[in-house]
Amino acid sequence: MSDQPAAAALKEIFDRARMRRFAEDTKTIWPDFDADRFETLATTGLDDLGIMQRMRLAADAFAATLPSDYERALEILSALAPRIGHGFASITLCEFVIVRGLEDFDRSMDALKLFTRYGSAEFAIRHFLQHDLHRTLSMMREWSLDGNEHVRRLASEGARPRLPWSFQLRPIVADPSLTWPILEALKSDPSLYVRKSVANHLNDISKDHPAWLVDKLAGWPQEDERTRWIVRQALRTLIKKGDRSALALVGAAEKVEARIEGFSVAPVRLALGDRLTIAATVVSQARETQQVVADYAVHYVKKSGAASRKVFKLKTFALEPGATQPLSISQTIRDFTTRTHNAGFHKVELMLNGDTVAEGGFDLAI
Image (cartoon, rainbow, N blue to C red; front, side, top):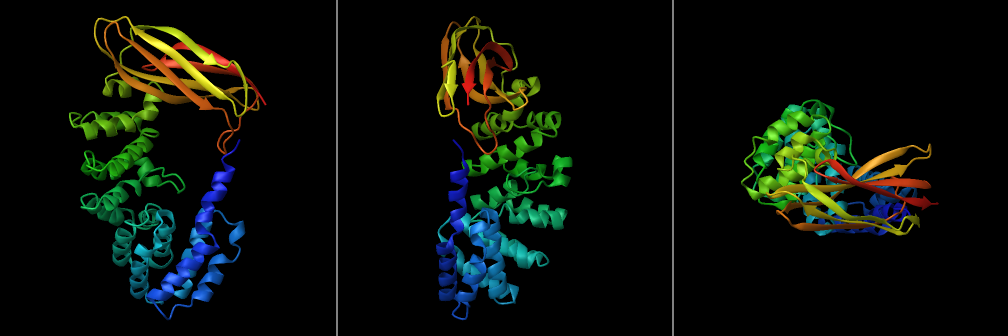
């Protein structure tokens, strides 16, 4: 199996019907709009393009057909924004800001602040960070205090060092203190939408500055449930690696006093498309309650015959003295664009607080 059909469907967000709706709605707002020319420009070579390329094609078409006066063009697109009705399609408006407004900072910041409420400006703002880092970060610090959750999220998400589907922000990768004031302002945000972004931003930092991050997060007051949730999610990569300082921060640094019963990996032979189930029971052997982070790892066989270990989250729980905790997870073995399976024996590990406590495996036939 593959996720390629899903990717193909995703790019159809920007199909010919979408471009036609862009043209028709813009014509309604601004009667002088050359809808036919826009549609021609926005669909030329469309079939050969991916989703981000299609979005840029639409933005370029707007740039070629809207008034040359940037302020007037933004007025028209601001009226168009609430008509689009699709979050990802609306990102086209933010892409237009990159095309036409990189040198008009103030108008562009106002536009992105508005457009992000309809479709996130997280990709667009990165071009401004690349163009004028400190001025843009100053604006984003203001956004982190905004009353709108979409604007606050943009302050975090747009400045992520390693945002997926975008280029790395190398100055921020090198120096995470640049965005720390933004993350500080959002560490107990009432919106889960914002907190997820903060956690992902912090997880990005953990890949380059693990000790720095743990030290910083140790200073956050975790009596607030919202902050505690962010910290746990932010440390997920380090926890999967068994980083003791990260585990300590979530109260799970100690070796778990328990025995493992009934560990199983089933079936022991399977093919692509089959479902794998991993199960075990953890039985406490301690006199005190233990905080436990349970993960499992699969050693995927590579073409060379070597193995590549990938850790997955399983469960986080409090294990009372003498208590038992059943664990179980199932996943379908299928190919992805980012992972293609190969035949052979795949070792499976069960880990508690970073320590491997049981091993098994399965044979995969291709």
